[in-house]
Length: 153
Length: 159
Image (cartoon, rainbow over all chains, first blue to last red):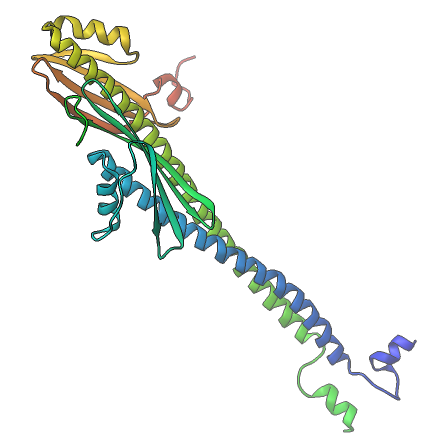
C-alpha cells in the first residue's frame, strides 16, 4: 500500500508514474549503453589492429619479393620504403638490423644468414614486426644468387 | 481541468518512453554487433592472408634451397667433363623428389614444394652442359588430386 502511495496512489506527495518510468528507462539505457559502447570500442580496436596487420603484411611481402631478387636487405628495404632510407646491412653471421617504421609506432627487425654453396649463395632473411614490445607478424624468406661460388664483396 | 489531470494528459503517455528506449537500445545493439562482426571478419581475413604468405615463402625457400643444391651438383658434375652422363645419377643419389627430363644439351629438373593442403609450388629449371641454369617455371598451382576423389559422388547411370 505504501508503495502504491509512492507511485501516485497517495494524495499527500504524488509522484508521477511517468517520471518513475523515465528513471527506470534511463537506468536501463545507461547500462545497455555502457555495454554497447564497450562493444563499439572493441570493434574499433580490432579494426585498427587489422588495418595495421594488413599494412605489415603488404610491407613484408614487398621486402620479401625485393629480397628474393637481390639477396640484399638494404636494397630490398629501400625498394619497399622508398628512397632516402639509409639501412645498415645485417652482419652475415646471423646479425640483425632494427628499423623504426610508421613514425616510430612499429619496429622492423631483420635477421639475415648467408650460406655459400658450390655454385652460389643462399641467404635467409627473417623479418619481425613489433609494436609495444609485442610481435605483430614474422616472415621468413630467402634468396639464391648464382655467382659461381664467390661471395659478394 | 486541475493540475494533476493536465500533467497526465499533456506530453508523452506512460510506456511510450520505454518503447522508444528499447527501440534505441535494439538499434544500437544491432549496429554494435555488425561493426564488431565486420572488424572480426577483416581481422580473420588478414590473419589468413598472413598465414598463407608464411606458407608460400616457406615453400619458396625450400624450392630455392633445392635449386642451390641442384646448381651445386651441376657445377661439380660439369667440372668432371661428363655432365650428361653423371648429372642424373648424382641428382638421384643426393636429392629426392626431383624428376629429370632430357632436353637439348642438358636436363630439365622438375619438382614441387607443398604450400598447403590445396596448393603447390611447381618448379622447372633447365641445366645445360654449358653451365647455364634457367628457371622455366616457378608457379603456384592447385594440388593435383586423384580424379576419383575429386568429383562429386553422383550416380553415373550404372547399376
